[in-house]
Length: 338
Image 1: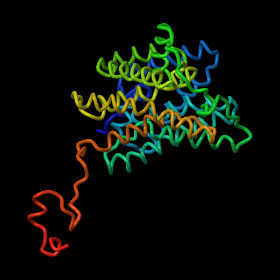
Image 2 (image 1 turned 180 degrees about the vertical axis):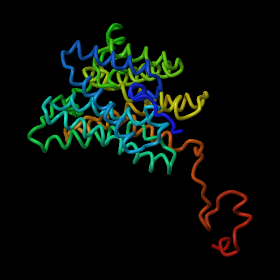
Image 3 (image 1 turned 180 degrees about the horizontal axis):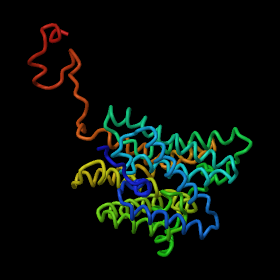
């Protein structure tokens, strides 16, 4: 008897929760509640609708392409689609062409996810994570400039020269709380702190340890970005925190086995992500595209790749160069004469 496929609704909700590496339908529901709340506050529902379309299309595409059934059921082919679906309406004005773009982009994200799995993951053991979303999102937003039916909107990241650098004051406690939750909400491109709180609740429901890692990532991002004097307006929106939040979770708990050394390693990776965020914001601004989660993706790839191979690359002493007692004893007469 043929094995019955998993429920599409469950697959979709798990795909939504997998943005934070959770495989939990209830968490997925809460993530949609968080998006709906942000849409209600702003009066713009395109992001929530786009996210729903994105995850459904991505999941159905994976089924049609006969992708690994267990991965589809776990939501691993849906989370990049939900991010593409949320991102495109955020940066491109609503139009009939936009929704065609969302459907195509979400379907393509599934193919890109499979491609990452067949190359990056299969060859080097590095998870693709939101890399397919970043690549697909960059190409789709950049491509929108070429089509008259699509209008790119939103504020491009500020260049470093646009911000008068100096010592920034520490935000008031209430603003620190808002920034803390916005750091989490901005993973889904949500600027409402209540949405971030709902997302964090969903994470804690799925995994208390994951929730703690997300809390730590948000706090570290705040301390580093404020302490380094990053643009207060950008920090306040949570735009320096969403990638570090994902890095703290991915490196500290998901892809490496937790231990004191791994926790310290994850802290370093999280701090590094804040700096990579600032660098990439400046680098992509001239192209008129957002950095998305690229700072997290790049940092995570670099910190996950070494795994157990943390020792320096083995090498031999240069011939004829006196290096240590053992080498002097084994040196050839010619090298001694030299």
